Length: 210
Image (cartoon, rainbow, N blue to C red; front, side, top):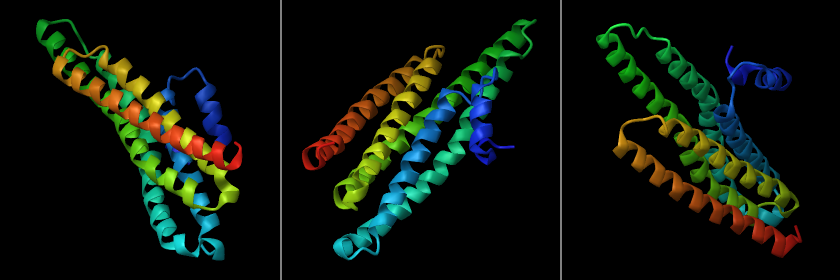
């Protein structure tokens, strides 16, 4: 059974077990999925209200984007755990002969790169969501401003957690050019995410005393 098919209770129990998955990578993807779901809720609390009639089309477009992102994050929850399993399997390959050792090292490198790419996609996609979350927070139903802020914080949590998982995988890679490129992108994503989160939280503080 896929992780996303579990009940909340079962998912939490599985997370709390002595199994290594779901771990921080899947939880980061879940945080991003929650961010988009909560953001979609805000759009639906805005659509159809006379006070926000001029924002209706923008909110509908935002909802459509958030729904698509949520679907991808739900896929990434399981993909992250599968990537871990792939790395674990690579380390179990035979290493008796020189040929086996070389093959094992290659498979480990490829699996580890894949394990870095999955959380990087979580981070990239969560960052892509943040301007939409900012828009619905500033233009959507004011009664849901705290929901918008929580959605934004969940998105940034997803980014920070995902990038931790990127970096832990990069640490064991030998492709220096690949590692440098991924590290540089991670720094850029974190910087942009911090600005977007702070912008909405500052808006909430200045306009609603949050």
